[in-house]
Length: 561
Image (cartoon, rainbow, N blue to C red):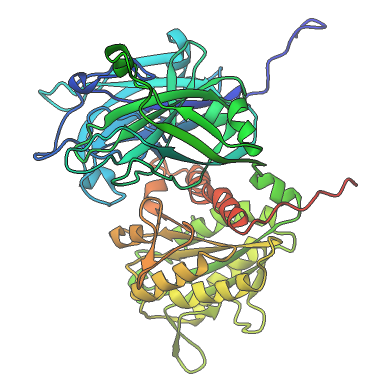
């Protein structure tokens, strides 16, 4: 037992802090400017007529497990062997655990989410998070391996503890009389923002869009968390580089200037003009003045609200279930059926319902969940329905708690005839009609669809998703069984926003996962369900926040009582 006054350790499972992990790779010949990670070399070039389009995928290894699970991906950077990725990985750091990380690098050749199947593998690196933190200045360079007979280059990692600053800044900039870099035109300028580190190096934190063929660009307003810009230190140097975009990735350096958050914030009351300077030109030309100017047109700060702020303010999550009753699932009385009710274990359908529902029901005060089936012939006349209540009550399709949903699901298996086709649009539109009546932020709707096959009404489903994206609503799709679900990835708009007839979804509201990826090889159902729930629900908080922000809805004040 610890002596009186001794410092006791934090309970197991409590993160010591949150860390932001930055990733970079660099090719020797193209490294003209020392940025924030030093130099990695010789990233493989897999494209014949251009350079690689790299992306880095981070995998984490569970505590006490040898299984690797995808944690996140950087953005894809076109046509470069020297990527400095803007998208970071934010990890909880546990001092008492060995947190193994795997970084896989790919050259992206298609828009498929199944990256290992459709992209060129460029190499991988294995590190422990503690290695990065324990390295000099918390920066680690590690060789990429995994492509036989090839030197894959290196990956560079940097970790920094995140501040608790929750402000978001929105700013807009323009430039005037920038240097002309293109022979047959003007310049195609864009800005790159870097925050300074304590050791004097710089970490990329934002890129603007490219404005084509002008020396006087006006960039679109953009928002960035203050912690990303300066990690809460208002006097920390922010360096801004101005580049001329080139299709082959060898962007021309126009110039740079430095500022700070505190200096930028003064633009709330006055325009701020910065001289863009090119150090090489300044040394060579005696009469050199500058390479143009950049003006900060606007700068506004607002608090970043969290998912918890809205829940504490009274926002309720309304959970709706839709289950696939098409004949492709197999006869429910047969052990080969995906709906088979074994006395020994839950079916994949029941496990998905229970895993997701048991977590989400904690955020729904009445615990009443509308539950529907689709793709079956229903009594008494055997008509095909794509939206029948599992409890057979058309006026009130709600079930009491997840146990009530499961009970009604099992009862429906005994009374309906599995048929087809697999149509999602009717049930999506049903939930969307409810969400359209409650757009004030007091309610947020989550639809869980559990299905075994390819969608029959893809066009109608896309249209329903595009319409629903403007509403307080998210959709989770869990695919069960051995089918290929490549078409489903089109609905999960992480990389490419869902569109229909020229209209794009306002937000990404769909999360798709194949259930088979979560079946524990040891047969541990509890572990499988926990992992499934974690991944399918992970995007809900961000999706809720995106709706609230796009509609300028702030959390309601919490009752002091």
